[in-house]
Image (cartoon, rainbow, N blue to C red; front, side, top):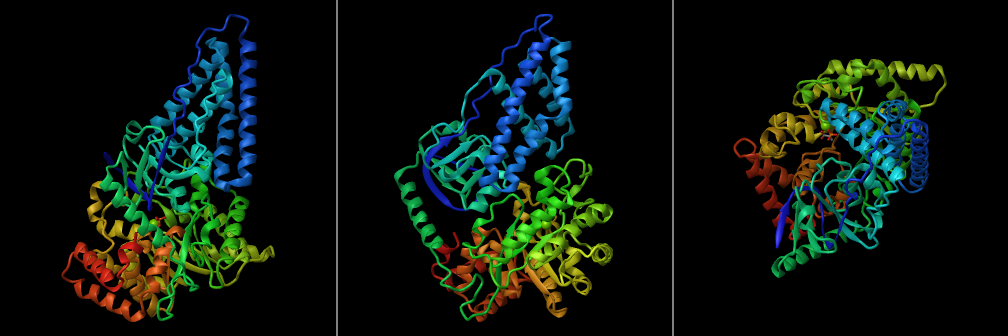
Length: 589
Ligand code: PEP
Ligand code: MG
């Protein structure tokens, strides 16, 4: 037996046979000098392969348009753009004519030069583009050599997909009905596989290092996406323990909302539970998971998926579609569209600047205020979409009142412009801000006077409060949502919202943490927003608690806040839950 540990990327347990996804390795390519006078026929050969590749990609785009999301399609539209890049085509022809390289070698040389350029830039966005370029090169070389390897051959029954890493285009082409789980050597918790897995409720462990070396195709493994482990060749005792956990998971997931909308307390009180979504994620499952609205729409994924700034029409289409889906969720549904939260680790070519400290740099609302045309275009698209549902606009990373005033001025100009052109929009569109910078929590009263709601982004609030990078494993011990400093800032923001009679919600990952999310509910937030697949668990927990229970829970925490550590508070909360709800450990899986 061997247990490998990686990143707990998407919760859940699954056991099943392994399908090892391999891209077929290097395509063997011939290399020779084209005889003098034969250059033009070699160029014709290249152009024919180019045309075949283009047709294949166009077919794929039209098939995916039927079954996948717009962003999935965009992956291949981006490949088409790379394929049709005039410079890449001209360069290849130049290598055929000037260096007399055969078409395969010329394609490889062109791709190598472009790859080297991208890699030198040492920028996460370009590293991703290198993978797209690899994809396109591979398709061209396949067309030229007739290399017929099909990486999905044999995947005709449900299996755990084991791979070194999966590109967006590989992920999109997997037959979803056969995917039980994901285990990858590389990848992060925010990769395409990770987002897809979480949205679809498929357990996933990434960053395993070398799982592809240890597993054999067809071998059964145990995958625990909650703990971040994969066990190969498990002994009897481990299988037994795993099966017991599986049984608990089944009981937890079979929990029905017993007819009550998500977030209803035992005594009828309510904390609305909404979903976090972003362009490119399948949104069919929102209703089934009990989402009553969309608490966070991360618009920056339009930029990230396209690799450039989307047009107003592209944005309008995406926002209006999401608004329509959201309004079908419940009578109390709203959709909170967060304007471009770019910067930090969200890098877009041609837009993001190189900064020595990007997490503290020109990001999010700061970037938008320094690029007013981008801001205006986005606000226009959101306002135009506001006739399709109850749309709210949210500003990310707000640090001070001046930013709100500047944003308000631009928003009013955009509204006047729409008025002048008789373009309809919701005149009562609510405007809010993320509270994710400690200064915003401390100054929440001043901010609240200019806003209709707050949404607390605990992912960043914890990072900035504790000065601990949210993605850095070596400082993960400092990343404590229950640290008293974080709890005190949460209290400041929530109390300021109440004093100023505006709504307050939490949309950071901690909203979906069974112990911490309930604490935010106890502190008085009106709404919690999370990945849809985590909603049933949180709804289940709230349905077993009364407001009086929540008050007792809150008192326990408040009493500890001036003396205890974050870990002690977490332990006390967990113990309280276990004593209050005997099935807590099963539900909270
Ligand atoms: C947050 O910071 O909590 C948040 C929801 O925003 P993001 O994770 O997109 O930074
Ligand atoms: Mg944030």
